[in-house]
Image 1 (cartoon, rainbow, N blue to C red):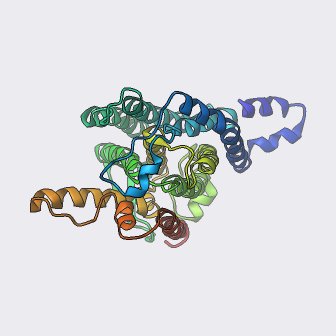
Image 2: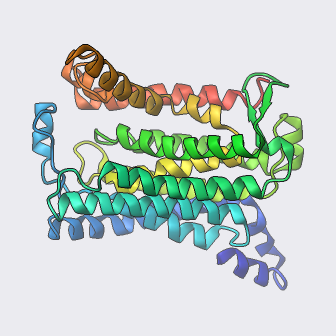
Image 3: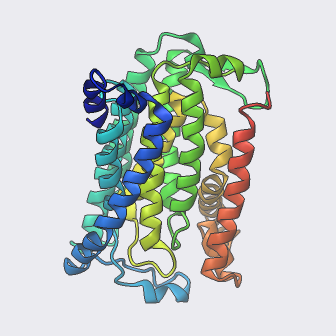
Length: 362
């Protein structure tokens, strides 16, 4: 909206042309989302507390978590509000990728909202049944995958790019692209959700990865930079940097209230939405493997749960980890919550730097 206003004003005042630059709007989006989070955060937290929308804590989990019982949850709605308003303000609303990512984000957020609502309002500890949660995730994931697959005409946009190698990529075809897109979106969504178990643990890696993906999106959408860095040129992808800037700003604003000891939890409404958004952007800019590298913490958390369940069933009750997901294993091993969180942040910083190095190391 503000971009359209600036373009109209630029007809008389040339200085407004500066708002055509994606980099400026990405920075402004981050700042706007941050300010919205700061301004709306206390009100959202008070509303959640007044409605008694509090977190239920597992009795079989770490005993240090029992004090968290009743802490307002579903705070991810604050993130979605900030992202939605900011993207509509600073994004190019004629860009189809902006709408694709917004629809995915809000769609997965709606699934998470209903799941959280059943848990905290209707006191149903299971929330939305897993089969139905997965069903609706699959519906959105497949619709988006089919849309992207059927509207992509450039062969390079349907290749699985292997980082660190100049010419190594694998043609997927339409079907392969749709399948990969589906698994990346749904898988990343659930991976972030599994990681969201400690104060600030999931949101900071999400912010860092969003910032890194914004660079990839900008490069992919710029014909000169894409050619120089041997990346596929994807017209319109650069605009996703504005959305990702909004995500980073909203995430940092939420972290202000989610840092230990948390005043509010993200809940499924935030975790599912943010994960799906990252996965969708990674598919559009053809960086699925780089996303897996940068999101190594998310991958490790997911694999720890899968390994624990499979090993438990195969051995009749034995465990690999003290408790899954992985962050609980370290907690039960003697690490303080803040130690686990900060160390996982440090690991993510290193992995994001590795991911960014693939821009040039090819």
